[in-house]
Image 1 (tube, one colour):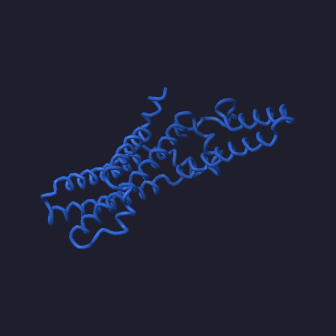
Image 2 (cartoon, helix red, strand yellow):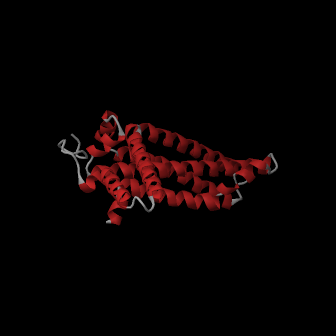
Image 3 (tube, one colour):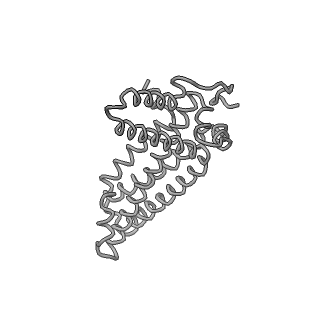
Length: 230
């Protein structure tokens, strides 16, 4: 059995079983204040239950398909890398004197390469036994209850890190498309609808956002964020 799962089938109570505890408490409070705000309490309970169900389902799904998810992230990062390489090559061939554009394309290429490395780091940091537990569990609730506190932190950190890395890849890919189009437009086309559509992903904005997302992704994937929060 993995070090991330409990060694017995003893039912978890109290804080470890926080979903069940919350539902029981909310029901008791609902009956106690039945004559005051029953509809509002019921709506709140339903929203909380839906949020918890969605979160646990996402965690369970990620644990089952973590390797595939990271592969898709790496494929997206490779596409982003190619866009920046093309933009950089065109600039070097046609307008090497525009050093600022060369620096921007180089920085975008660095972000794309860091995304690939971070995705691979996420794969290496994910314990295979944790994936096995997810694949063998029949539902999200069973999966969650098999993990101890360290297992909870690991899967939450890995999921959050993968989401942040994926967001970085999407943003950097659109930034690469913006740079490539503007580079080609300088030589062959006039500026038109496409660059206006991609304007929110210009390097001055997308580059900063991508950098912040990469740092946050590393903090969650490595688990260092949980040490900072203690």
